[in-house]
Length: 66
Image 1 (tube, rainbow, N blue to C red):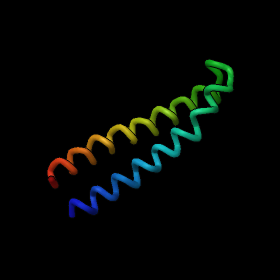
Image 2: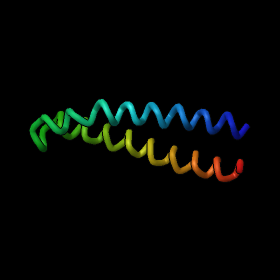
Image 3: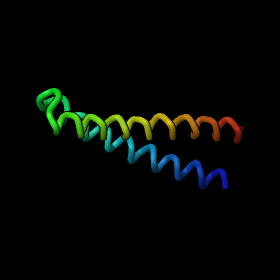
Image 4: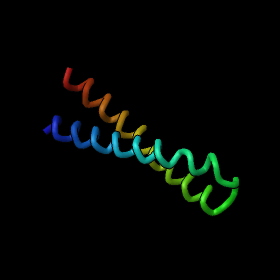
């Protein structure tokens, strides 16, 4: 069961990382405060939140399995 949870978190971690990685450039090259900048900026933040939370729980599960 723990392996299933860990693997699910890993998939979420990878998806969140890819989203943040690809969306990162849109706020960088668009006008600050514009609609595109704001929307893609929040999408980047959400992707990074997914990465951070999944990394925390994967580390916790790894600690429990040792």
